[in-house]
Length: 583
Image 1 (cartoon, one colour):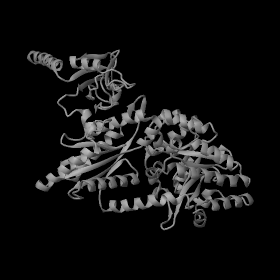
Image 2 (cartoon, one colour; image 1 turned 135 degrees about the horizontal axis):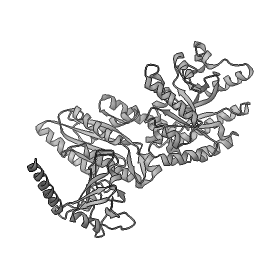
Image 3 (cartoon, helix red, strand yellow; image 1 turned 30 degrees about the vertical axis):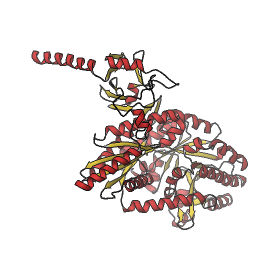
Image 4 (cartoon, helix red, strand yellow; image 1 turned 45 degrees about the vertical axis):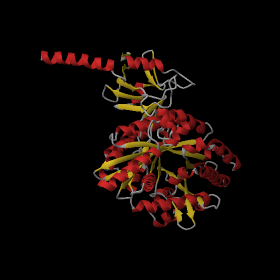
């Protein structure tokens, strides 16, 4: 035992001596004590890089806190085992290119109270980071190769495959929700997110693999020697898991995901551009399916690529040619069976394909940049419909509109609401806005501010699809809501799943304390109706009561109800004819 102890002590001294003499910089940081160890190179580098041109230095030590490009190294870890990046966005006072920084946690995540910081300064023998950036081989922001360099490497890989066989895979990685982060939290936060994403992707590939930035929020990965497609799937899964963890930057906690398309050579193609196009097509298929996943290219992707191109072309003309229409589905009071408000749902009367539901075309809105254009049309049309109902003697009628937060950021949703309300002679109380839970996760502070700006107008807000994402109860405490909709997937699992029942009861209890009304959506059977009624849920929506109906049908029903008392929706639901009347 004594011999082992002596060896440990000797080993400790050898390790310290090696770190002291290393050409790389090493520092150990403790959250409470600050910088507790630094070798000479680390100290020299921290003194060399100075703030220049308003940019934070690449590496600095401020009162014991070690910072990389202005961010505390422990915050950069953000619950991960490691973080690394080429800090090419800054420069030393001598104009040197950036250095490579690696941060490794010395604790079990997510505590991360201690970390080893390793800094590799640029070498004059390198083809120089700056020179590679100028030649278009290296992305200055992330330190990853560019698409141009990636294509060159992919071409060489394909050529080698022709000689000796084997397989290679191309992964096309497109971030989910990044544009919203960039628009709402600013480009500085967006740039930091891209750096961390690049570093996380590199952590899950081999030294022989290549990750590159294709541009914007798109990355590509080359796996040059794999045993089969299943190997590419495992890498894609690892990347998805890594990117699903929150990213902490500049006081923001950002949530994103990714959609990944995979093409395999030589099975799918043996040309560089064709492989990239195939991986891109497979990625878009993931987007349409719901995002946050991966898919291999296949014959269905070729069909999807053609279909997507046609839809994009047709969608641009849909508003001008009056092909878009609004349908309305009642949200009923469970106790009385009468409608309390109506959800507005967009439909597309396509001249060739008939009536299209939102899932058939909404995924393309972001890609075509039509979010604001169609969003403005929806607000104006719903306000016009509510104006007609209000003038018929129903001043308290309310419709809910599903909105995309990009409409607030990229357009002028507040002004659009004000204008639509004034033109149609209604109040802000006649229109409520529904926001999907996942759209609020990227930045709670920003979400609180813009939701409050809407609510200050007198417009009520519904949290939609609660339980489909992270189902964080602190949303109730942090954000200003008037209603919360329990996602249909929760109710569908009742009554067999006790967790689902408990979640419904918990939502009801917390919401009641905060004065928030609860809506159960997706009620399709009389059993589900009885469950929510027994559970004290006040409002419900679903095919059990009524299907979405066009506005002229809704208006006729309301006029008929004014002359003749109408039966509760849950009594009508048992009659086939009544259900058809709402279709």
